Image (tube, rainbow, N blue to C red; front, side):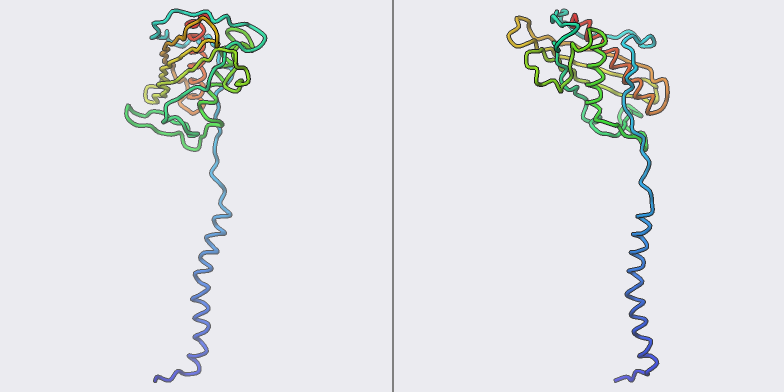
Length: 228
């Protein structure tokens, strides 16, 4: 058995204490550093509400509807006569991240920017407001008016809603379907709207503004095709 000198025996507890405290100090330092660091800043984006249904810079749309306009008997005031169901969008846009197309096959995201609400909810509310601006306030309600059963249902689905950033254009293709009021003699109708809108500012706000103008133009085309 090897003898251990008294001096060596005195230093061993100190070494053990240091060996135990060093990892604890490292962990504590990392924790404090994490607490001190501020969360990343984010910008919250929404569709602007000042988009006019008459967009002078928008190109002429190409409509793919083979149906004839249908008169729905919509009123310009009073209780809603048409319910706009929640707008449907492609799955790759169902996120709070603001996405654009940087090539024909790939998507990208604006860094540090998030949608303030789900894209389909914002599009629905904005489209309902645009339709009401065309046919009369209160005539069209969005998806939340489910307590009013005796109205026709309008389903709008964005098959394409792509901001082509290299081309600075927003492309939209919409399919719509109208289910008449229960008990009505009118038959269901459906149609399509295609639209391309320039993105005037290469920024998230510029993309949102182009989306609002597209929504306004689609509202105008829907009102025309439906005979509102």
